[in-house]
Image (cartoon, rainbow, N blue to C red; front, side, top):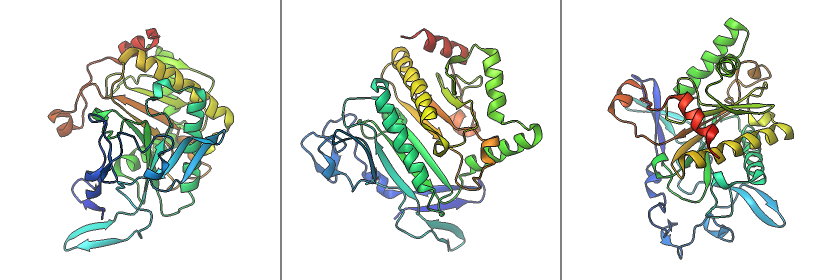
Length: 332
C-alpha cells in the first residue's frame, strides 16, 4: 500500500510506493516482464494485446481500431479506490495513497516515437489528454493533475512503447503551490500575467525563439535549467487543456510536431521529460486564466544531475539557450 509522508523541515510530502519496484523494464531487454510473466517478446501496449493491460478508461478510435487509449497504471503509485485520510504514526504525519494514476498509450505502433507522429497522432494524443483533464475534474477530492511523458531510460521510462502518465493528487505539491501563488501575486501587482511578460521579453530578445504560430510560442528559456530545454507557451488566455477549442488544439499540434522534428534532427534518440502544465483544480475559476498560462516543458536528459544540483537546487547548464535555439532552428 502506498502512502504520503510529510516532512516538517522541508514542508513537503514524499510519496512512498513500493509497488513501483515491480514495474516492467524492456529498454535493455526486449522481453517484457509484465504481469509477472514473459509475453512472447510482445509489448502489452501494442495493438491486439489489449488483454494484457487493465480495463481501459478511454480511447480514440478510427476505422474500428484504437489510435490512443488510457488505462489504469498496473504498477500504480496511487489508487482512486481508497479513501483519502490523514493519520498520525506516533509523532509523524501520513495519509493514505489516494489519487489517480493512469497510463496514456499514445499509439498502437510499438516502434513509433513522438518525433515520428503525424498531425493526426498528435490530435489523438492531446484530445484524449483533454478528455481526462475534464473528466478527473469531476472528482472534487483531486487538487492537482500531473501530466508527464518520460522518454528513454535516462528520463525514468521503463517501457519503450511511447506513452505518458497522468497522476491526480489530493493536494498541491509545495513547488506547484508556490509557483501558482507567485503568478497570482505577480498579476495582482502588475495587472499582467507573468508568462505574458516573459513571452514579451523573449519575443523582443529574439535569439531564443525557435518558432511560433498564431497561438503558441516555442523557445529556449533565457535561464534554461537543462541543455536544450524548451517551453511551449500559450499566447492566449488559456489556463488548461479543458479550455481548448479545436483551433487551439490544432495550433498546439502544429507547433509540437515542428519541435519534435527539430528535436530528433538536432539531438537524435535521446531521453527527455515532457511536462504538461495545466492550472491546478484547486481554486480554479473564471479568473484563473488572468494569471496562469497553459505551457509545456520539454527537458532533454543529456547531462545527469549531481551533488551540487541536489545540494543547492541550482542546475548547471553547459549550453546557452541562444546556442540551443540556433541549433534547433537550423535542424531539418
